[in-house]
Image (cartoon, rainbow, N blue to C red):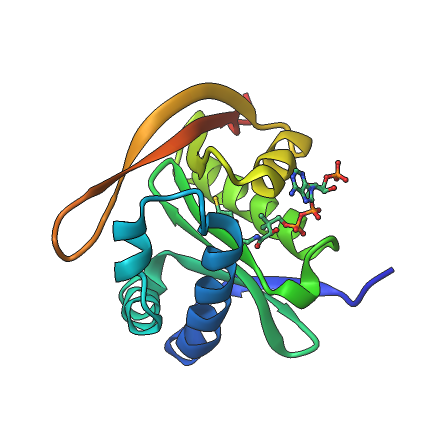
Length: 163
Ligand SMILES: CC(C)(COP(=O)(O)OP(=O)(O)OC[C@H]1O[C@@H](n2cnc3c(N)ncnc32)[C@H](O)[C@@H]1OP(=O)(O)O)[C@@H](O)C(=O)NCCC(=O)NCCS
């Protein structure tokens, strides 16, 4: 048994921790799997800016008083499930995806969806283990300051409504 995992809404004070986990996890899941032009603009500063902009959409997982991972939910889309390296393979990611599904259902959506980079095998295995269905490949327009960059992804969905 690992340490207890708590989830709560993100706060401004979490932005630094979220940005660090996001920057490291993005590289772990995306390098070699996305266009070089996207890697070039995903700088440390870009993650700090985006983490600050997205506080209202952020839920954090806390272990032992420290942020151990986060998820962002926007409407029916589950975005950015990220777990600190030290907390992968434990309860943090499972707790975050369950909370994200609960939030999508609470916003009265029947089905949640997410995009995962085609080459991110660990994340795809994680979603499938949690009951998400691979709906096949599509190109996701990753947002950048200079406009969207098309990234080869798979769309996953999961029914989240209780009835
Ligand atoms: C994706 C993430 C949240 C999953 O959390 P996690 O705690 O690492 O997930 P788990 O270890 O419980 O599950 C991962 C599964 O992938 C498997 N796996 C590990 N490495 C793998 C690889 N290279 N290829 C395929 N499967 C892999 C694991 O064995 C496990 O499967 P199992 O439960 O059948 O044994 C976490 O790895 C992470 O933060 N990654 C970096 C950020 C990222 O890519 N986020 C997703 C963006 S869409």
